Length: 546
Image (cartoon, rainbow, N blue to C red; front, side):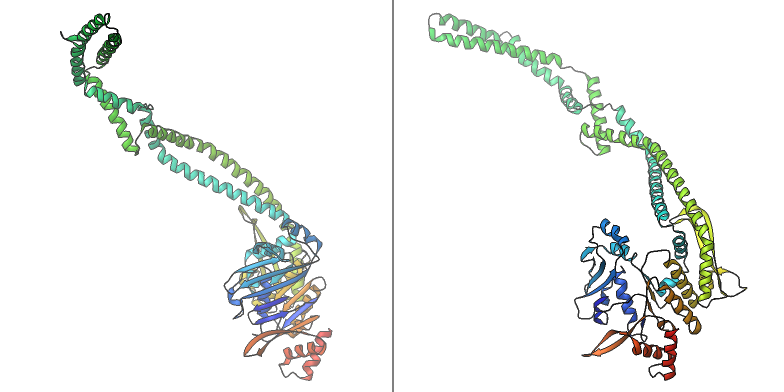
C-alpha cells in the first residue's frame, strides 16, 4: 500500500507479506485509518474530510499480485492486464474523487467489481449485517455455487419486473382512456357529422357576401345594362352609329380607318361587357332560404373553431385526425395489454423454473454448510453452540429467488434455536462470521481476506482458538487482520505496529513492521502493558511458538 495525505498519514508505504498479517496498536493510534484508506482502493465512497489538513489532495494505492483468471475482466473493460495491478484513488480537498486501474481512469463501479474479485474486507459493521437475511442467503448461495444461476435469475427477475411495470402503465393508461373515451367519441362524432371540407369556409363567406347584397347587386347590374344596351339612347347604339359615321368618312380620308377599327373594337368589347353583366346577374338569386342555410353553416363552423380554439377548417380536420388516432390507440390498448400480460406470464414461468433450481441447490447445500460451520464453531470456543439453517420457499418471487434463509442459533447445549438476530452476542457473531469467512474462502478465488477487529468480544483461550483458525486460513490466503489480542497477533507471520508520532507541532500516524524481538515485545505489551514483565515476554514467545 502507498498512502499520501490521508487523515493523519502524510506519507506511508507498506508491504504486507503472504500468510497472516496482524496490525496492532493502541486505541486511537490510527489502525482504522489504515482500513479506511484500504477501503478507498476497494471502491468505498470517499469523504473529502479525510484529506490531510492543508493538502490539496490525498492519494491511496493498493498493489495486488494478479491471477490470469481475471484477464477476461480486463479485456471486457479494455484495461491493460499485467502480473500486478494497482488500484488508485485520488481525492481532492474539494471532494472530487477519481479512480484508476493501472493508471487508466475507471468508474467507481468498475473499481468495485474488480476489487471484489481481489480482496474481501470484513468490518465490524459487516458482522452486524450477518443478522440480516441478505448476508445469510449470500452465504448459502456461495456454498451452493449459485453465482451463475443467480445471475441468470436476477436478469430474469429484472425482465419480469419491467414487464409488470409496462403492464401496470398500460392498465393505468387504459383506465384513463376509458374515462376519456366517451368524450373523445362525442367530439369525433360532432366533427364527423359536420362533414368538414377543405376551403369550404372561404367559399361560404364569399357566397354569404353575395346573398346578403343580392338586391343591390341586381339593381346595379340592371342600371348598368340600361345604360349600356337597354335604354332608347343606350351606349351600344350610339357607339354603333358613331362607328358607322367614321367608317363612311374613312372612305374619303384614309387616316380615319384606324379610328373606325378602334370604334369597332370598343363596340365589341362593350357588347361583351353587357353580356357578362347580364350573365352575372342571372346567377344572383334573391334566396332567403339559401342565405339562412349559409349563415347556419358558417355559424356551426365558427362554433367548432371557438370550441376547439382553432381558426381554420384545416385545423379542425387535423384535430379530427388526432381524435381518430387517440381512439384507435384506446382500441389497440387491449391488444397491447394482452400481449404484455402474456409476456409477464412467460417471464414469470422462466423465473419459477430458475427459482426451483436455486431452491434445489440451496436445500442440497444446507446440510454440508451446517456441518462445516458447527465444526468450526467448536474450534473457536463455541463447543456447545449449534447453527441451523432454515429455508422457507415463498410463492412470490424476490430479487434473489423465492427463498428466505434464516440462520437459527442455539448458544448453549439444550437451548432452543432462535433466529440469529435475537440469539447471538457480539462475540458469538464475530466468531460465527470468521467461521463463515473461513468456510467461504475455500469456495471462491479471493486471495486476500481482511478482518477489521473480528476478535471483538473474545479473550483468553477463545482468542487463541480464533488465532489458530486465522492462521490455518492464511495457509491458502493472504490474511490481514486488525487485532487487540496478543493471542491472535502471536499467530501472525508478519506484525505491524501502528503508533502516533509528533513532529513540527503536528501528529502523524506511523507504521513499523516488527520482526524478531520487536515482535515479541509488542505482543508482551499487549499482554502486560507498556512496562511488560519478563514473564509477559516469555508468554509472548510461547504464544508465537505454538
